[in-house]
Length: 244
Image (tube, rainbow, N blue to C red; front, side, top):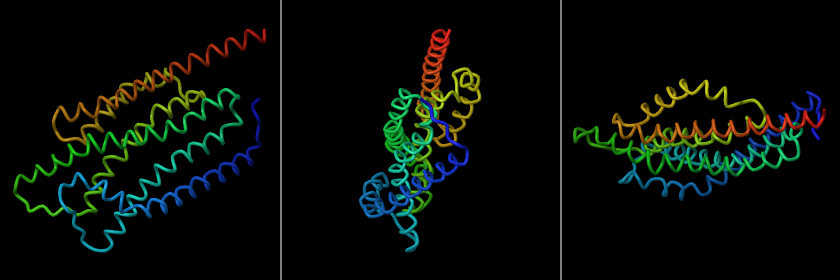
């Protein structure tokens, strides 16, 4: 049965859970920083050469960026669990169990999005940008610029791949429905196309390799929302019949 909480208790609970998430992020930063050298070695493979630094500040900047992304990945399950705990009083018992399954899904979809960008998109973009030099420049690639370029490209995809689970969660809560998502299809396609064209080399194949997964994610989100919305509608109708 749903439990009602006073507004001030909701605010206190929200503050406590945000502090837990923030603490998890800090702990994740510390843990990832302890292993940041291994993370650096693993991610520097695509550079093809030894990366340069311009000063000791670059080392700290790079390590903080890499630790931050690692901490974000580790914090996602904690943040998802705290969000689940926050909305639990408004959910039925069955809905609680279903919503709990979103937590590992969010984590693995984030990793999948990062992997897609790192193994497919990043090498393509990196080689294209280097090819623009056309032998006209003496290339000295700094580690800071290399990882900034990588993270600016990969991190948004990790977040975008969370879309189906977020839509599923919001559909369960009744905030989103397939009709709203379908009405937003054209502007959504436009935004996704702009994103793909902006972050990929100016050739048709590269654009297609990025826009297709993004469109599939959006259509998958609509299908998920349609399924959940239909299920909620049937359950509501059945409950009304039983009350009569």
